[in-house]
Length: 196
Image 1 (cartoon, rainbow, N blue to C red):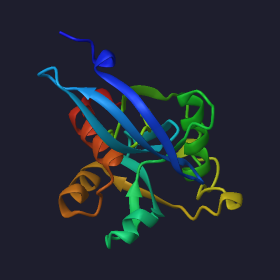
Image 2: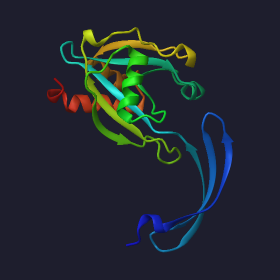
Image 3: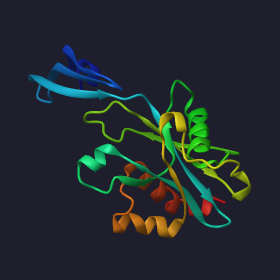
Image 4: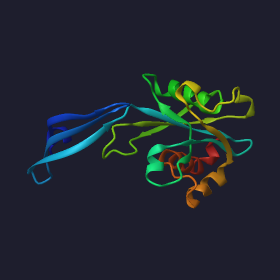
């Protein structure tokens, strides 16, 4: 069987936009499973790596989530103030260092331990972003700041404390519909006995 990399050759690339991040159009020659070469055109949105974290307080059996405005969701006509786990771009940091920074900025919680769980491409058909998933146990003493995001980045983040079972139910009611948050809440439900 042919190795996957030998089945794809980039024949051309054009930058369509280079603002906050880069959007490229590619021409590629792709050898399908039958051995025929196809010329394909694809667009790729180049996003830097990111990290996200589930903050879980085992004593109170709750998770700390955030609510913030998302323009793409607004443009789709869905409720744009989304409930999510804390997350952010790595900004050239190691994933754990980045998620410690983001957790503090967004929620005010200082992490004692951050456990790496897995990584995932959440939209691999068109976006290069890989997200590193973490979980951390917290308690009320770990909240050392207000959170809410960085003023210089014009972040307007509301910090929410929600019982784990209620957060899970919010997936079914459609109140939580962010992929990374759903993944981490499902992970927490499957691993609840190991979380304390």
